[in-house]
Image 1 (tube, rainbow, N blue to C red):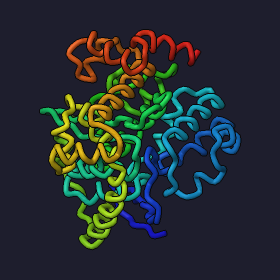
Image 2 (image 1 turned 30 degrees about the horizontal axis):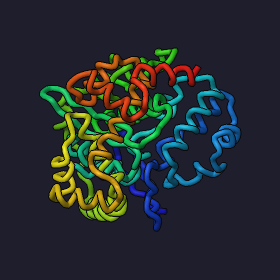
Image 3 (image 1 turned 45 degrees about the vertical axis):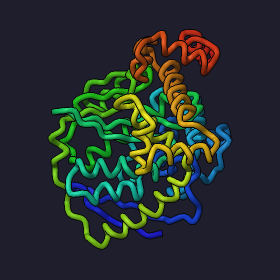
Length: 360
């Protein structure tokens, strides 16, 4: 294993690089993002081995930061941690211990940029190397910019801790790039608020809005122009070459790639087949052929993503059905309800009621 070093402010950041011969599995993330969990559990007097055993995960899962864990396993691991610590903001505590240093090559490519804005775009572009189950996007509108995180993996039961933890990591990443004087304008989280808001308020030091349709860090756009320290040109070339090689392997999972593009586009507007084809730099007909070769149609992928986002919002937030419909760009709540019944066999209200009964 080799290490590269880059200084952020007065703090050195070490980035472990451990190339793997195997391709990253779909719907997975590098374990490094959750490396703070053992220490968090210790603080509550909870044995990591007991948590891993209850979550049906190997005892050595945290030994190698380059190891990958499925998002379903992450969700189960965090759920068991909540149960055993009785802490419903444990995602925040885990995320507080992570930042660019935990992002491996993706963190390094962010630091290869000339400005914070370019670094964030690099981070978003290559985020799938860190996490193939979610997406990150940078959306600027006038004086404010949003760094948005969204889960693209289907069938996730409870994403509340993952949403909160992702916002803590995003906060640290922005401070790593901008410096300790940076603070957000607001934080939105696509989940209900934890029972104790004080730890969140103390960490983020900005207005918090839970029960949102997206998880995002909102900050003033002028920070995007902030210059970053120069990176050695040879080191930059090495990072870029390794990233391109790994990204090609991840993009080979065609359906998952299309799904992530669809999820990202839903953050800013309705998603069309032409848009997805343009993102892949191919013609619409080529996209159609490729998807058929993988046994799916574009409409099925789009419906699947909308279904999963709707379920996440209905289960994890108190958003009104009309607001969920608007977040998925339906023209009316009635049209959304018709689609949701087609997907699930029940209305959105019935689904939410059933999900809450399961939790209770």
